[in-house]
Image (cartoon, rainbow, N blue to C red; front, side):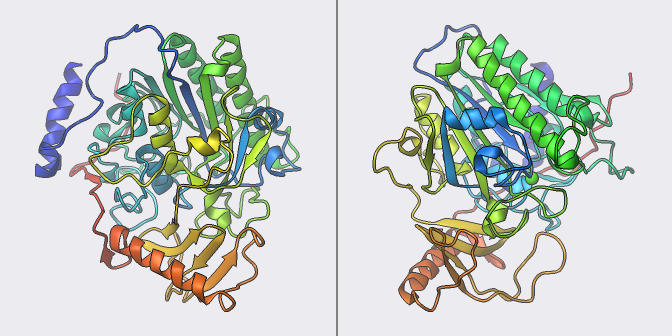
Length: 482
Ligand SMILES: [Ca+2]
C-alpha cells in the first residue's frame, strides 16, 4: 500500500484544487474472504474492439463461426438497438466506466483535439469520476480489468486507480506501439501497474486474457466479482494465436473473431464448472462498429467505425443470466453502455451515484424481459468528438444539418443536410423522410438543443460537463531496468 499512498499524494498535487477537495470513492481496502452474498450476482462484460454489428452468427454473420456466442444468445437475450456513445475507443470506454456521455466527463477527445488518447498524453478519465468498478467494489465485489484500457496511460490513471483490484492488459490501442521513438514506447503489457512485456506478443493476447479471466474467476468464486474484459482484438493490426491463425473463411479478421468466440466459450464453461452459471450475468458487446478496411461487417447498418451512422455506434449485444434473463429472446428497445453502471449497481444492491448527473438508466426491466418494458431514454445523442451530429428518439433518428460535419480523422465533410430516418422501417438510413414529418423534426431539434445546453457542442460549453484529469509531466510506459 505504501507506494500507492505516495502516488495519491503526488496525484493530489498535480490535479490542483478541484481534486484536493474531492472524495475518492472505492479506494479503501476492503476485508478479504467475506462469504458470498447470494443476492449479489457476478458480472462479466466482454467488450470487443471494433467488432461490427454483423460480425457474429447470431447477428447475421455468414463468414464467421461463432458457436459459443450463438449458444450464449440462445440461452440469453440479444439487444438489437444497443449503442455505444462514440464511434471510437476512448470516448466509448469512458461511458461504460462512468455511465455518462463522453462530453459529460470530458473524454470526447484528447488534449490535442484528436478523437482518442495517444501514448503519453496528458489527459485521462478523472479519478474523481465514480466508475462502475468503484460502485461494485463498494458492494464487496472483487474487480478485474483484463484487456485494453485506453482511458489514460499514466500510473495515476490506470485501472488500478479506477476501482479495479487487478489489471492485466495493454493501456491503449494495439496499433500505437508500432512506430517507436522517444514518446512512443513499444506496446506495453501491464500486470497491475508494472510493464511485464514490451512489445506485447499480440498473437497470444486473446488466449492470455482468457486465462487471466478464468484464473480470477476461480480465485474469487466464493464472493461476488466484476470482470471487465476489453479485448484488444479484432482492432487492427489483427492477430490470432496459432490455433486460430489461417483457420477462418475471412482472413486474419475472421481468425480473431473466432478466437474471441472460443474465449467466450471458455469463460462460460468455467462458470458452469464452478456452479456459477445462474449467479452470473455475462454481457457481450463491442466498443464501436467495424472499420471499413480490415474485414469486419456492420451487417445492414450504414457507415463504419468513427461515424455517427448506425454502423459506427450500434453494436451486437448479448446478455445471459440463466433463470433471470429470458432465453432465446431479442429486445429492440434502445439501450446503451451507459446503462450498465446503474443496472449493475441496482442488481448489486446499490444505486448509481446521486451526487452528479449520470446519463445511463437502469435497464433491468428490459434485460429481465418484463412485458411492455420500454427504453428509459427519451433521447440518445450521437456525438463525433465535440460535435453533436444526430439524435434518436423512439424509432426516429435525426441527422442535424452541419456545416462542416466533423470526422474523427481526415478533413471534415463540407456539409451535411438535415435528414430524418425511421429506424424501424429503415435500419440502413436510406430514406430521408424529414419532409413528411415536420413535427418529428421539430421535436428532435428541441431535444438536440437540450443536449447542447447540457453537454455542449462545437464551440459551446455545456452546463453539465465535468473535467477530465490532466497530468503535467507524462512519461512513456516502459519496462523497468532489471
Ligand atoms: Ca475501438
